[in-house]
Image 1 (cartoon, rainbow, N blue to C red):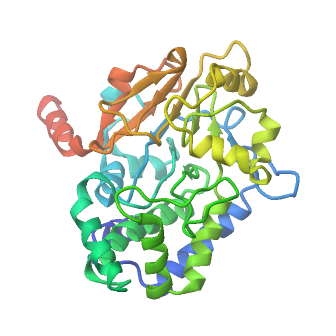
Image 2: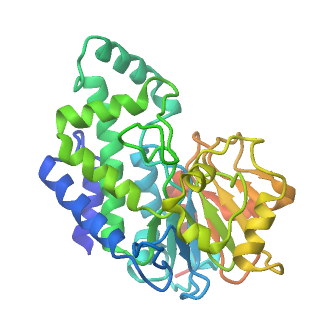
Length: 355
């Protein structure tokens, strides 16, 4: 398992995208796991495939880490895995400092990512401008786009390895950027924001890797769950535009509207009380659960909507994660933490702790 850790870190710090052979191998392995993820927490849908709902309410009750939109931030993934949880945090039962990676390895916590693995955002505007210049000259694997693809696919490669290594404890939900073909339809929309990001990355894959890798990435994306519930929270990529029953969510792959409603909702588009009704449908009218999503960026650590029941948690300028304790209510001021500060926090713990 330690070899897996070293492989993940080596990938996240590599100067080149994954090789064809290794990328192909991990895509096949991860999609095989997702295809057969018919478990106590992921029921079959009506066509006998793994459903779109992860339901941990009857599963082992573990502390949970929620990871907002990743957007090809390789350093974010590295810092998450290396983040040191100290005993004083009382998040997991430990007697000494333990990294998130080690806690995953020891089955002490669960991780759920809200989606959007690909396409860098705020820190690479100049690179996207250079990519546009390359594409205007029909250069589809030039230095600028190869640099972007390196970040995108090294991130995806690491996420795939984590799913393969911890299939029951590491989960990734589909976001609106999980659309490698850059199509419009079946709940997806073609994507462009800073530049023509969706088409750019698709073209790179076609010219650098080939159609088979493009197909495998798409197959992986379509195998992902859409929404997750625990006794403490509900999680999807975006704010739910409306509310659905548990059975409708299990069978969401057959309903493009549900896919769109959980991945593409803009601010102020959601129906009034959609979160409250979704929580009640999934967890009962007496539930005190909170709904979490990313998708639309926030200026601080979070934004509260829907009468205090919904937290948006994606700040592209910060490397924040959310801690959901087993036995205490969520406090946004203490339970949203920045993993980029993990070295400083660990050093502070060492200085203040008597051994």
